[in-house]
Amino acid sequence: MLDINNPSPAESVDEEATVNPRIAEPDVPKQSKSLSPGEAVLNRISQDTDFPTFSNHIIEINRQISKRSKYSSATDLSNAILKDYALTGKLLKLVNSAYYSVTAGKVTTITRAVVLLGYETVRQAATNLLLFDLMTSKSSVDELKEGFVKAFWSGLIAKDSSEIISKKGHEEAFICAMLHDLGKHVVLLYLPDEWDEISNLMSTKGFSEMRASKTVLGISLENLGIAVAKRWRFPPQIINSMGRLSNGSLQKDKGKVDTLQALSNFSNEMCHIIHNTNGESRKKALKELSSQYENHVPIAPKQITKMIDASLEKVEKHADLITIDLKKSTFLERLTVGAKEQAHDRRNPRGDRSLNPEVSKMLVDGQSNPDASNMLSNDGKPANPDEVILNGVQDMSAAMVGDFEINDIALMALETMYRGLAFNRVVFFMMRKDRKKLEARFGFGAGIEHIVDRLSFDTKGGTDIFNIALAKGKDLIIENTAKQPVKGLIPQWFRQKIKTPAFIFLPIVYNNTCLGAFYADRKEAGQPLQAGQYKFITMLRNQLILAIKYRN
Image (cartoon, rainbow, N blue to C red; front, side):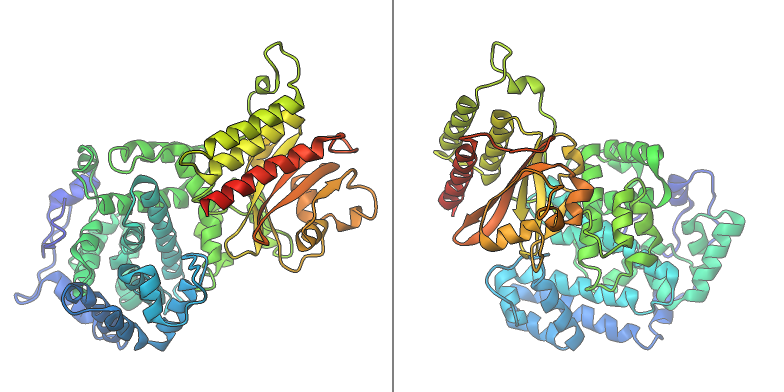
C-alpha cells in the first residue's frame, strides 16, 4: 500500500507487483533535486490559464473547514460561493431540486441554504459543482466526458451504499468516489499529449496504467490525484479515501479499513465491472465484489443490483444540471444492457419512461407473488372477504397503537386488499416529492416484478382517465378498457405495462393533497368489485389516511 498522505517521489516496484505481479516497474525518470515528481507535474499544470483560478476558488471554500470552529459562519461560506455567479446559480438550482427535497419553500439565497441543509452539506455541494465544471470544461475530449460520467455515477453508488451501511457521511462518500480518478482527469484536462503517450504505452506495450504513468510523468495517476487534492486543501479523510485498497487490506476485520476509502474503492470497482462486463459475467463479477468487500461494505448482490437499476434515473434527473449528454455516453449504454425496455424508453422520449425511483424513506420495496396458500382459510377454501378485510383493519389499528412506520401500514392495507378480494394484482403508487409523477412503490400479484420500481406516470397536465380522476378527486371503477369512451382515455403506459381489462384506482388524499393511490385489477372484463366490496376498499384507504394523520 502507498502512504497516501506522503506520496513518494519514487514509488516502489513492490506496489506495482501488488496490483499486477506479472509486470515489473521501470526505473523512475530522474527528477530535479528541488522538486518531487508530483510537484513538477503540478507546476506544469499550473501554467494552464484556468487551473490557478479554479484552484484558488476551491481552496477558499475548503479553507472554511479549518476556520469554522472559531471564525467561520454561514456568511463566510456564502461569500466564498457568491464570488462565482455561475456556481451560485447552479448551487441554488441543486438545493431546490428533488436531490435535497427542501420543504421550507423555495430557497433563493446561499445563506438560507446553509441554515436549512447544514454547513457541511452546502460546502460539499459547492465543491461537487466546481468539480463538475472542471471536468466538463473541455467537452471536446470524449474520454474525459466518459470519465466524468463514470465518476459521477460512482459517486451516486457510494452515496447510496453509505446510506445502506451507515447513518452519516453520505455526501462525503459521494465526493470521495468522485475524486477517485482525479489524477487521470487532471492529466486528460491539462496534459493531453502526455495522456496520449500513456495510452500508447498501455495499448502497444501492454503497460499497466500505473507503469505507463510513472514512465511518462514520474508518478502514478493515483498519487498525482492525491497531490492535487492536497494542494486544493481537501480534508484528510477525503485524501485518505483516494488510496487504492489491496486484497490484503480488504481481508482485515471490520473497522480496520476507513469506511470512506472502502466506499470509494467499492463504487469505482463496480463502475469498472459495469463498463467491462454484461450478462452472466457481470452477475458473477458483482457477486465477487460483494464477497470481497463484505467486511467493510456489507451489501448483498441483490441490493447491488437494485442500486444499479435505480442509478440510471438518478443520473437522468441531474443530467441537465451537470451537463451530461446521456445519448453519447458509452458507459450509460452499457449500464442498461439487459434492460431493453429502459433503453427503448430513453430513445423514445415521447413515450412514458420506465423509471427506477429512489428508495422511499417511508415505504418498503415491492414484494411479489405471496404464497397462494395465504389466500386460503385453514380448511383450504377461499378466505371469507369480510373476515380477511376486518382482520386486516384490526392489524393496522393494532400496529398504530405503538411506534409504527407508514410503510408497514400501507403494506398491510395492500396485502389485505389482495388476499381478501382476490385481485389479479394490486399496486401502491406514491406521489413523487416534486408532485409531477405517481410511482409504483410496491405490490402483490401477477408480474408485479415488472411494475414495482419500474412504472410511473405524469400527474401534471394529462388528459387520460387517471389524471381526470386525480384532478376531480374521484375513484375509478373500470369494467372494460376496450370500450369507448374509456378506451380513448387509457394512456399508453397502461397499455404497454399493465394491459388488463378491468381495474380500480383510488387516490389517497390527505389535507386536500394526493399522497398516492391504490390500484387493483382483474384478468377478465366485468365489474372489478362485487356488491359491498367497495366499502372494504375505502375502509382500508381510510385506515391508511388515519395512520398518516397520526404520524403528522
